[in-house]
Every structure is written in C-alpha cells, then in structure tokens.
Length: 389
Ligand code: ACO
Image 1 (cartoon, rainbow, N blue to C red):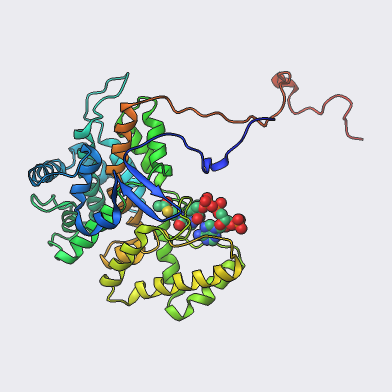
Image 2: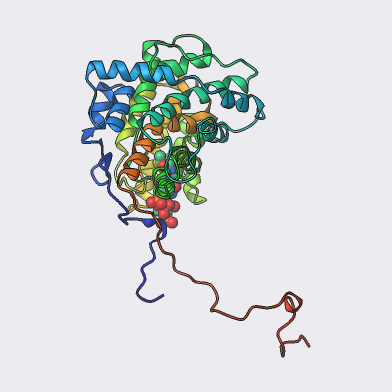
C-alpha cells in the first residue's frame, strides 16, 4: 500500500523503552541497569544480578543473604508440577517439558479472571527459583532416576549441578555456571522478551507471559542455536578439518549456528567470557579447540567470500563447549538459557505492567479485494464463461 512502510522483522524499529539492559551493537557492549557485563561476569553472582534486575540496585550483603534464603525457600516444586513431570513421556524434549511445567506453576494459585494476578517480585523470584529445579528434576526423571531435593544452602548454579547428581560441584564448576547465568540474564527486546511483553501488555499474568517467552526461545534463530553448535562441533570432528568444513557450508549456503546477530555488528561481548570458561574447563582442548578453530576458519572464509558481511560469534557459540564440559547434555542447552533469562523476562514483564499500553501493531493487507460471498453449493465450480473446451 502506498505510503505504508513494512518492516519485516522489525529491524531497527524502536517499539518501547526499558531501564533494564542496553545492547550497543556497533561497539559490542552490553549493560544491565548501567553495569557492564565485563564487570558483572567476573565480580557479581547470579543472585546479585537477579536483585539488580528485580529490585533495581545491587544488593547490600544483608539484602543478598535475604534474597539467597528466599530463593532457597522457593525452589521446591508444587505437587501438581512434580506429578505432571512424572506423567510426561521420557523422550519429551527438555524445552517442551520446561514450557509445560512452568505453565503449570500457576495452577495452585487463585485465579482472578480480569487483570493481572500473582504478578509481582515474589512471583518472579518463585519462577527464578523453580526453573532450575524443573530442569534438573526432568533430567533425572527421563533417566529413570528420582529427582533430588534442592540443597538448602547452595546458590542457584551450584544447587542446579547438585540436583543433577546429588554431589556438590567443585567451586570451579559452580563459578563457571554462575557466570554463564550472569551473562545471559537480559538482552534488550530480544524475541522472547518481546513476546513476554506483548503477552503482558494484554494484562495476562506473569506465568502466561513467561510461558510465551519460553515458547519463543526454542527456535534455532534464538535460544535453540547452542545445541546445533554442538552438532556442528561433532560434525567438524577435529580442528584441522574446520576450514574445509566452513568452505563446504558456505558453498551450499548453509548457516553456522552461533554466528551472527541482529544487534551485534562485532563479536558478541558475552562470547569472550564464555570462550574463557570453555577453554578453562576443556583444558584448552576437546570441543573448545574445535570451536576455536571453527571460529578462526569462519572469520577467514567469510572475509574472503562475503567481505561486507559482519557475522561474528554470538553468545551461543561458546555456550556449547562450556556447558558440555559441565556435563550438561546438549538438548538441555536452551533450558540453561531459560534458567538465566527467567530473571530478565520477569523484570521486563513487571516493567511492562508498571507503564502498560496494549502492544498491537498494524499489518499491511495483501490479499484479494472485497468480493461476493460464494454459497457452498457454488464453490469449486468453474466461473461462468470459463468452461474447459
Ligand atoms: N551463517 C551463515 N550466514 C549467515 C548467518 C550464519 N550464522 N547469519 C547471517 N547470515 C547471512 C544470511 O544468510 C544473510 O545472507 P544474504 O544477505 O546473503 O542472504 C545475511 O547474513 C543476513 O541474515 P539475516 O538472517 O537476514 O540477518 P538477521 O539480522 O536476521 O540475523 C540471526 C540474525 C537470525 C541470528 C542470524 O545471524 C542467524 O541465523 N544466526 C544463526 C543462528 C543463531 O546463532 N542464533 C542465535 C542468535 S543469538 C540469540 O538469540 C541468543
């Protein structure tokens, strides 16, 4: 239609405001409420960042202790959710299970049909606390093992690893996962966050908004990518095969998962932290060495074949060798993303409620002109005068 601009993919379209995170794609900087992730990743715990997102400031020592205790008290799952998990088929994909189980968390809550209910910071903390429990419980149930009750004193990351095996993780493993959780907490109006905000803008409650976000995260163009990075690393096989592998991929116009980003025109700032973690946990070898060689090969081949393209490693690329080294199965990588992002999604939903306007964009209609209704007896007939000879 003349005069109407269609922005497929909303690229570059500004659809709102947030104080929660800032993605500076040209310089490769990510900040949460003004704090650079380069400072937060080595210096803050996940719980400190949860407080930052949901309460607005970094916590004092006393506030942090109170938050940690609260999260710990909220980790156990309601009976209805645990029963649901037990009833699901063992071959179910962990993200489908997580989406279904998170949705069930609102079932025991009193429902108020009109308006937002149970959608406050306490509900957000409950979701943050229970998400890791669901992922760990499902990992055990699908192996025919009983879920392990949350540890009363461990933090979010250490407790997650504990709930998988019943053994307290090493400080190095706990710190590595904690840092992963810190890095992925928030990222502007990414697709899943936007989806949550659209849902919240109808006054649907927090659980509905988060369920929408979880569904949106699953796709390979968003949170589904790291499992496929892992598949690529296995397919490449060894560092010396990386360059030929990339050349073959480019020749058949394939996509390398973990590369490219709508916002970042340089390397994703989260990638360097995850690369360091992957390198350390793999002692510089294993899947880390293949990933490193693959990134080098990618940068070389892209510079030759598509010199204008600015397609660099994103957050998902080194997620695969980092989480793999922690013993996390690759079909759970998207769930790990969700465990972290839960705090960011909730903060965005609460921000949406605080200054809400229904999100309802326009679309350009490109179908047929208005035309007469055909009674059912006349449908499928050749129009008069067009009979076949
Ligand atoms: N591999 C190969 N080519 C790529 C890649 C890639 N990973 N990413 C972009 N391109 C190419 C496209 O083929 C296209 O080329 P063309 O212009 O010759 O057709 C061009 O770059 C633009 O691609 P778009 O998909 O239009 O760009 P967009 O801004 O939508 O890309 C996206 C962002 C979807 C993330 C893309 O880079 C991609 O598919 N990456 C792989 C999947 C991935 O890693 N997803 C996780 C993203 S991070 C996150 O969500 C947490």
